[in-house]
Figure (tube, rainbow, N blue to C red):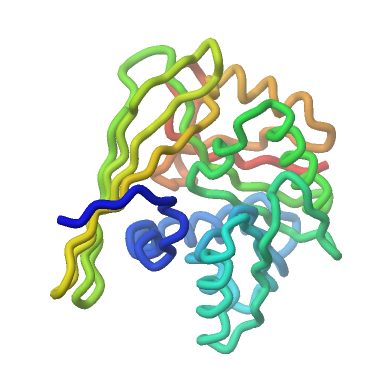
Length: 259
């Protein structure tokens, strides 16, 4: 098998295949959160670090005004090409999730799969949350999914996914290389094994994430003017089962209220 070292985000077709397969649960959860926590039917949504836009185009198909930004030009191009293919406005932009301003505040912001933890310093996290507090109207919500470090029980340090579309199969693996909680970071190795009728390719990458315990994330939010934790769920995306933000919390979806 051919093997290369590369940025996995530079291969949006493979990324979208692996992570796009779980779109339905996230989509339905976002719509259900909008119905429960907003004071009116949503008209607009924004996704920072939108990647390939696997949710954006489906939300746009419902009639919502949607937009997103991402630092990776390949991912943004993939997102806009798909929006155009469905006859939808090309509303994804190359941009930094810590420094942006929307022309008009939206009803809902969302970031579902841990992209927030790519912000490797406290200041970058604060900058992002301040941007989101300004980008969402008062009474709106920001749905943010992240992996916390549990202080009790066992943490999940390895994950794998597999997806097939036509003659393309992608097996993805992610595993912990090392974690330094006192320095607030952990590094993971990530690997794509790609199979087509004519090629076998392995893409290897290294990812660095900022760590958060439940208390550390709660302290971060308390320091942001205009944002508060409205409710907490887990990655089962079940609104009937709110989660407890305690030392055992790991896979968490926060519904943050903008005041």
